Every structure is written in C-alpha cells, then in structure tokens.
Amino acid sequence: PVVHCPEAFGLVLRTDSTRFVYSGDCRPSEELVNAAVAEGAAGWTEDDGGGADGADAAGQIPPLWLVHEATFNPDEQANAEAMRHSTTVEAMAVAKRMGADG
Image (cartoon, helix red, strand yellow):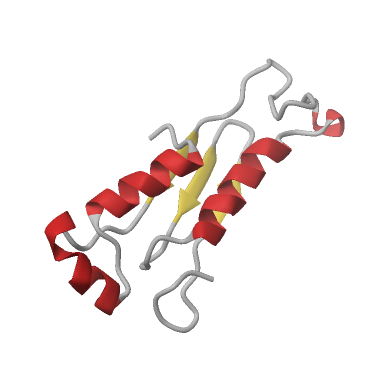
C-alpha cells in the first residue's frame, strides 16, 4: 500500500532483463523504496543462474526503472501533502534512494 486513498498500491516487477517500479498515485513511500531496494539486493539465486550479489548469469544487475507520480511543483508542497500527492522534487528523491536508472 501507498499513502493516497484506500486500495492505492505501488508495485515492483522484475523480468530477466529489468526491474520496474510504479508508485501509483501517492505521497512518497518509504515502504516502496525499501521493497525496490530489497528486490535489487535479492537478485537472482543460483537456481536462476545468478550470483550472490544480485547479478544475473552474465554478472549484470538489471536496470531499475521508476514511474513515480508527481502532480505538484516544489513550491506547492503544502498542496501535495494535503492532497496526498508528490512534488517533482520528492519523486526525484525517491528515485535516488531506490537507485533508479531511469
């Protein structure tokens, strides 16, 4: 769950070649940041052909792509908080904490 309205969720997906995080329509979520970081650290197991460092069989850690809602500009922080949305600066800070590639 993410902070917005009931039944609002963010998600973390992983394929063989990429990791994808979608914040949904919400305030910045430390739970979502932690889930994305944990997913990256978990990596592929030896059963999947990966290594202990989270890399795939070729030694590459797949890129993490983030799509994060950012309804408000930084000068509208109070509105963002009241409406349970994010500012552009907050979305960029989430991306940095996740280690997003794009």
